[in-house]
Length: 208
Image (cartoon, rainbow, N blue to C red; front, side, top):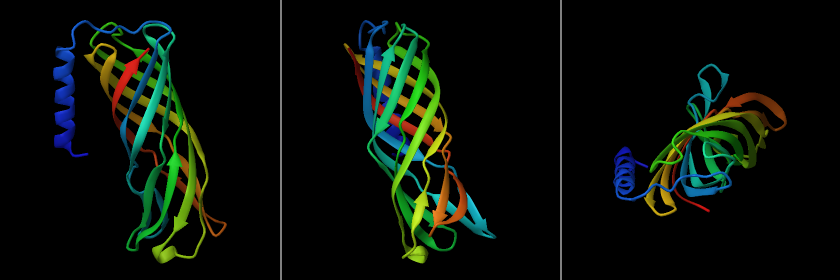
């Protein structure tokens, strides 16, 4: 998503929040559900396998969902789920040499700063479990077997819910996930792929 489009979405959300009327305050026992478009942006240089030979995991996009239970007006527990994200894997000087899919279920403990406002920012810290599957090798590695091991790591997030109608809001959320996967090629270890992505989501949400 371009920065211009993102600015337009956020501007529309702010305008909606200003005209949404009375705030839909979060209360203990509420369930909050969000869904939207998410992007996963790994860091650069995910694995060095030799002089001038870096493996890079490319960006991926998909549909994301999260479900939050409000234990109190300020404290929530959130589970995030998604459709599979697909990523190309590139090798310096050789182009695309593989691809993989992953699912990143993550559990967060959250603090919501202003649960009675039209604008409800929050932060969270939690644990991520990333499952890799459908790995494939191509290009310079065609015919070889690529395997990525599942990963467990910490995660952090910041986000905001902005009311646009009774019990409806738009949401923007940014998470950081510590994802490190041990890679093998034809059973031989390549090393640890440090993916460590930023995950950005633009969502529509409701509560009940």
